[in-house]
Image 1 (cartoon, rainbow, N blue to C red):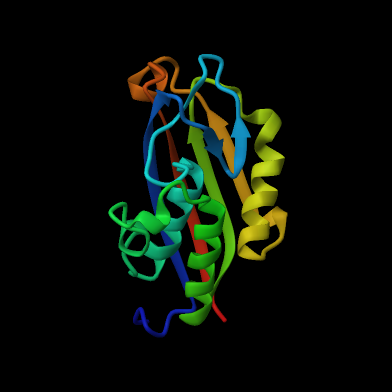
Image 2 (image 1 turned 180 degrees about the vertical axis):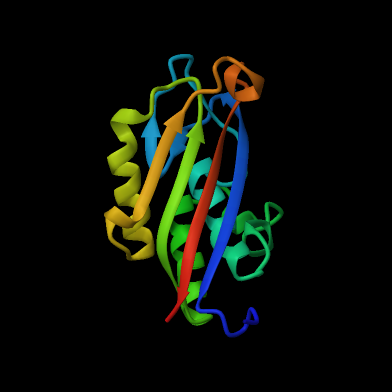
Length: 166
């Protein structure tokens, strides 16, 4: 079976952003409070979960990455809401003849605790894409004080998406 005849595609994405003072901390479209008052640094709102997801969606169809569609050099995307960008990526997939079947993702952060916000993150993502919340998996874990996430230098996310031809 060739790629052009296949009715399913899988994509994976990854993103990491540095934690800095004087920035909002937005993950999965939810504004969070970091115990040290830190937020994620980036050109847009730096939502690592949504960025990883968009890269997974684009990668599944070999369409490049989010930098191709929302370049940091473009002032239009300065402080952009990543859920709006996610909706644009979802619309691009539909134009290409594909839709999201399901998502599995993980956010790696020592603090703040994300568990109380997971359902809202799933709802935000599902609403932006136009799928059922039960098709969106978001998990959270720490890095056990190891690496940049463990030292609270940043927060990262991995995402996997399954697409089907419409």
